Length: 585
Image: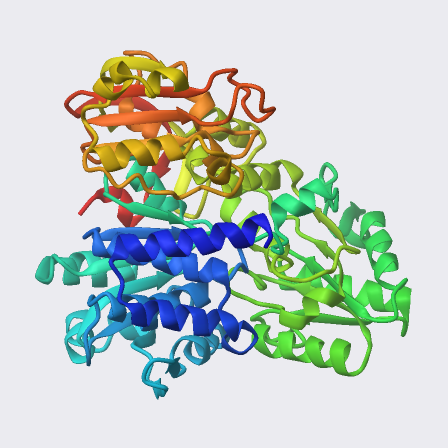
């Protein structure tokens, strides 16, 4: 078995124990994985579903599921709702889960209906069963005739909000429907926000406006995302002042020409027998002019199509995706797709990903849409490595750092670097500003450092008297190679009042344990552990051996940090959160 197979076997077994799950759930997991090609569910989605299930079981009201783009979030939700939650008694017969699509895209809504509302197979009873998921558009949820009626009609126990970065405004329909309506009448109803870029709800967790339990999605080795594209040097930085279509005014008349880089990229497409190139333009007028010039330049060597919501476009967004799929996969053509306000979060190019030859994504002012756009649509499970991509490298490098360690979005240096790169916000409602705002501050009362050798002594055990023997032995297990040599991000310590950070759970570039190791009594306990919950103790664990190159600290052992009473302080922040999450409840 590979290290990843060993990891997911051990992780699934541990999570089943923590959930106190019945044998039936384990049987269905085995059956599902043995038939992954049919079920479309893979180990990373099983682990994700079990981790979220544990969060629900622990009683968290607001949860966020953060996972890479095109990595299988829908499959995670499907398995969580139909297998995990019913098995552990959190969803009973005739109860349901509402899946609300934040985007207005009809095609995406229908895709979610097909994937999430399909029947599922129970290998124990050997029966097909109806899905407990009900998919609904945000507008329907808000007007049916009221959200409280929807929840009562379907006996909804949990609301899953897809692509959480959309529609998070203070006066958004979801804010009015959920926070102002449902939570007022039904304070116990739970919310799970799902996205690769849920910056609104994460920022609210950081500032203490909303308590959120975050589950990080597993990143399987076969996944190809922005981090891998950067490592393979596939992404070329946008030239200064670049626009796919150049324009200049001469004697009051605007003259257009194709940018040389655009020609270079289309030429790359034409080196292949078939394939797709994607260019984003800012408006329909410019897109149509670019189409005209490309047709003149390339004649019949490739097909040029414009998609968008304007009548002047060749196709609407959904029809255009279907059309290019036929042209490329069934007719073997080369297609240049010019998009206007299209091809963003949720759109899956499917089999076309293997035929992608280039992409040009000029958006560079907002982290969420800059990453979720053309670049994000090229992410997923495919073997295509022979494509060119032009985008903001600085923006994508910052996204890659977030992708590897989601908590970095609260790091002031990371935010300042983005701001200095002319990125003006994380999402539509979380924008960079310079202001003073209230924030939760938890002082540190005491810090104690123990080497691994001291951990094994009686004195070391006395220093850890706040944990029980089972947790103590679990802590010692973290220093074993069988633990630190696999992906351990998301491991739960399971000791009340105690939160931990484990060095092996982070990447080498941005290791949260080593970055926070030299904290002192003036620092904020909540920032070190990114927990606004009232934890009494936090433990930083440097579990790599001294001679391991990953141990950049040069120390093997732990640092015990005891927190004081949380208080409110006026402190500087670089983000203004105008979303519904930023106002508290």
